[in-house]
Image (cartoon, rainbow, N blue to C red; front, side):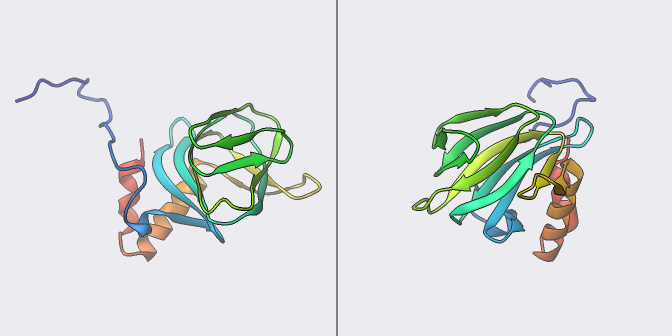
Length: 162
């Protein structure tokens, strides 16, 4: 018997394949944009997921009041408001408080980036008027509804909650 390495009240470890072979694990967000949930921390208000895009062009404009961390796994992307492009292997730190417009350039077949998002993403229109938002609870609900529709069952999402 292995010795216990954690406190008896500690939450369980979570180890899973990040890029799944089962397409049902990719939750559709909008046309040609999916997320793969990895962790929903409902008590601290953040989530970690893979964002997958199979489309070129301007995808979404958003503001976040808390930091976002990213690691590009496949493809590349940029923000209209910056002069850099994030490529495979690049780490991205996004400070809170600025509006970003995500763009995937022509020639990128697929972009996959791991994001850790704290707080809320507020989606903006071209005039920077708020038009929607996502937080850990909206992402959790989307995943739950998707897993139910695809036959995995709504409770499938429970493994990602911490």
